[in-house]
Figure 1 (cartoon, rainbow, N blue to C red):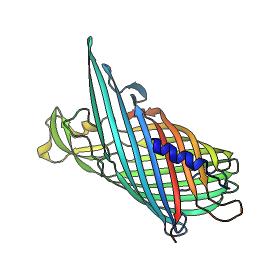
Figure 2 (tube, rainbow, N blue to C red; figure 1 turned 90 degrees about the vertical axis):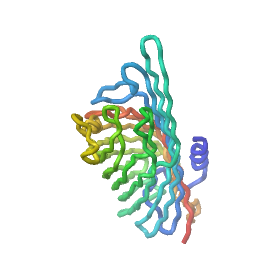
Figure 3 (cartoon, rainbow, N blue to C red; figure 1 turned 90 degrees about the horizontal axis):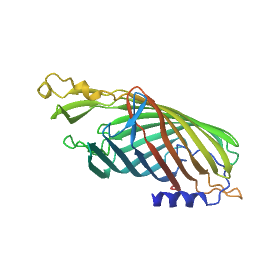
Figure 4 (cartoon, helix red, strand yellow; figure 1 turned 30 degrees about the vertical axis):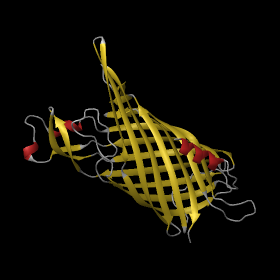
Length: 331
């Protein structure tokens, strides 16, 4: 976290002639981009069909925390097309205390390792954005493939934590930036199609093999900003996220547990969430006061929380998220 704050603050104090704006999704042609991003998320409550309850149930308390630091490398291939790859390092904790009569017992679980690696591409269709005036229009679309490189929790560990989803996924998204000088906004939508994977799960205290297709995810949001100074602005966001229900089946007839359908493991997996966030953004084209070009710089920080949910079980996450980007010309 200290590295992230240092990167963000050092970016904010560098001089630039560009006005505040939303950081571009794509990368300029012939440029190399290195990005560091991270987050710390925590929760001790969840929504159960819209009603808040403790993660530890009626007889205890629990807290789950996840810290992520990631490195992303990208290259602008053409005027509109860029590609990227992202490597995350994830550390997750689960702490639970169970109260029985006048006694209590606690448990801890922690895991650290590589999360799910992403690779993808961004294509900018429209780029009529005036950085100096912070106004104009920009439209970009993205496609991402998720590799299931993060370990998942073991079936024998009731307090186990996962570092990844355990299945591949394909995501597509689109973002429209509109700027009018002092005010502007990004409208964005994304769809994540998750593929099936084989897992070992416990049913009636017995481990058995199942095939799980996690529910697909839809995300729609708007992020308005207000310019505070040259290259610096305040950004808020409202996002609606819908997670479909999982499809769970026994891997084979021999894995079936008599009297218990595999779909019992999917109960409560589908839910919608409403997220709110606020933070700071910095985005500079690098143009100098004398009109000559320089190196673009982007950075941002925000606090995000889940304020409402419906339709199933959803963890009530709150998170601090940051990113910092530097560019270098390679041709």
